[in-house]
Every structure is written in structure tokens, then in C-alpha cells.
Amino acid sequence: MAANETPFYTPAAPVRILLDTDIGPDCDDAGAAAVLHALDKDGEATIAGMMHCTSSKWGAGCLDALNAYYGRPDIPVGTLKTEGFLNDDAGYERYNKGITLNYPNRYKEEAAPDAVRLYRELLAKSEDQSTVIVAIGPLPNLMNLLQSEPDELSPLNGTELAARKVKHLVVMGGAFPRGKEWNFEMHPESASYVGAHWPTPITFTGFEIGLDIHTGSRLFTELPADHPVRQSYSWYVGEGKSRHSWDLTAVLYAARGAFPYWDLVRGRIEVDRVTGENAWQDDEAGPHAYLRALSSPESVAELLDELMVKHGG
Image (cartoon, rainbow, N blue to C red; front, side):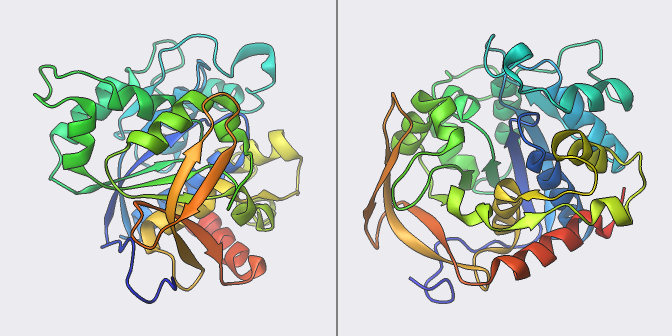
């Protein structure tokens, strides 16, 4: 289905976005945060909150530091409370620790709130069908949200709450029409569960979408040396280098929709709960879709680079 025909997802600016990210294992999460802040400043998005989805104690502080640098220290930040998932000596904290320790934020010493409780709080007080969740890491927070029980924040369980308050879920994950991708592979149980039980439409922006879109080099020529997003890229890929743009494309799609950058393939995903490998069944009436490239990688990269450096901080 072409994206300029019957739309699967039509954003209406400003899009209220909750970002769920594993910031730390890859610098494109920092790039995605930069794009989101640019869209927020331009009136295309409203950042309602950010969630960190690994056990790293530096993730929430890194997000909070980025938000503070962009003049938004008020943005709520939550974090996964499960221990031992993608942290410490596994090599997944290549820049989030440095950002947390070297830039002002609320979570250098104290722990950030529980992500599921913060999800429930933010969703409960939002308008119905008002929120787009953009998940650019593994999905344990979203699985835990779906499995959450009614509480003083809402009489609805997590699945009911998401069904009422969320308009759309955008997931950077999977490889299409079939394959294995890192986010799903790291936590296959949650990828499988969310794919099978999430109660609203889902769009997947797969591994193949961001692979050929290289961004980040302009950070080193147009932003100050102490800019935390520039620092994130420098610590991860090296000064002056670019990186694949998996997570940035998910944020762009959430704010602007598919056309003219991509079209959509409608259907249903199935994710193996042991391996994280995904399969796909085409279905024009299916609840899921994945992006398929229309524009050249270079044209999308130019747009994303412009958004990353547009407001600086």
C-alpha cells in the first residue's frame, strides 16, 4: 500500500510522544533524542516523557542530561527496574556514563522512577488516543506495562490503559519481511509478547531501513565540542564519523508519517520468543505495518542531519 493512499497512521501536529530507549549501546539513540527535540521546538511534536529500557544506572541520567541541555529539564524520565540487563561490563555503556557524570541531570546520585509506574501515570492523565509511543530499544518496559495491574493511578490494567490512551506504537525492531535484529534478539520474550498482545496498531521500522542512512558527521562541524549529542557520537564511533540511523527514522516517522520517505506494508508480525527472529504475514487489514523505502538513503540522511543540528541546544 502506498503511504499516500489510505493511511495506516496519520500524525496530527503536535504529536504527543513518549520515547522508550536503550540509550547507551548505540549512539543513534542520542541522535534520535536530538531529532525529537528539534521536532518539539518546531511544533511538530510534544515530548511527554522518556523511558530507559535497560538496567544501566546511567541511562536515565543520560536522557535527563540531554533534555536539560535542550532546555527541557522538566521532561519526566523513567527506567527499567530489572537487574542485569545490558549493563556494566557487557560493553553497553560506552557513552551514557560519560554524559551522566559530566552534564547536569537529576540522576547522578538518585535513581529515576520506575518506567512502568511513570507510563501508567502519564497515560492515565492524558487524553484518550492522544499518545504515540516510540520504542527504539528492546521492549521489556512495554511488556511490563501490558502486564501491569490496576492501581491508584488508573482502574485499568496495562493493556486496557494502552488501548484507551495510545494512538499508535512505533517500534524500531525486526528485519523485514523476515530476519533477526538486535533489539528483538536482546529481549525476545518482550518482542514476542508485545507483537502478539499490543492493543493498538504498530508500525515497525526495520533494520534494513536505517542501515544505509548515515548521519552524524555534521555534529562535528556545526555543534560545539561540548555538545552532549556530539560527545555521544565521538565516544561511540570516533570524532568526525557518522553512524547508521535506525532510531532516528522511527522518531521521524512518528512525527511526520511515512510519505514521501517510505510506504507501508500491512500485515502481522510474529516474533520467536526464544531467538527474537521475526516472520511476517501480509494482510491489508492487519494491525501491523513495516516501512519500505521510497526516498534515497541520502535524502533522508540530509533531512535527519539537518534536524540534529538545527537548534543546537
